[in-house]
Image 1 (spheres, rainbow, N blue to C red):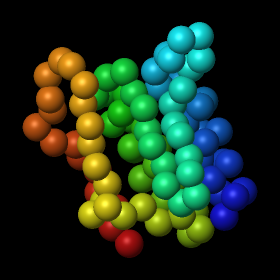
Image 2: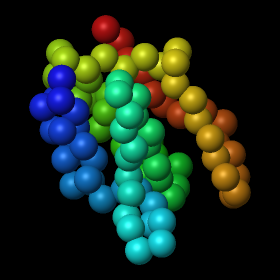
Image 3: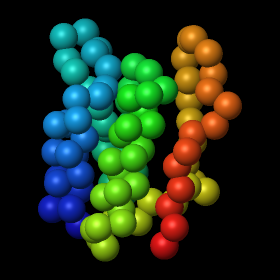
Image 4: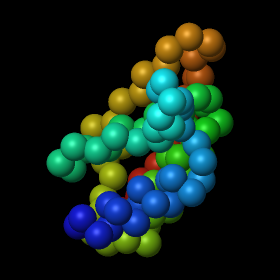
Length: 88
């Protein structure tokens, strides 16, 4: 599982989405089997979700559960919905 998560994090990092916290650029936080995606825009977050969804389809070690997923927005306009589906 660790190898699969490492590969996913590499893909997310290469995509370049995330936020700047002080001088540090962050796109994701991990703890056990949980992942937090950080993005400065709805577009960036959707792209990161797309990467995770695609990775979930190709890597059998990772299964994402939309029913256990949450969205938090701070400032700006709140999006009506995100187009994130996991069908497996």
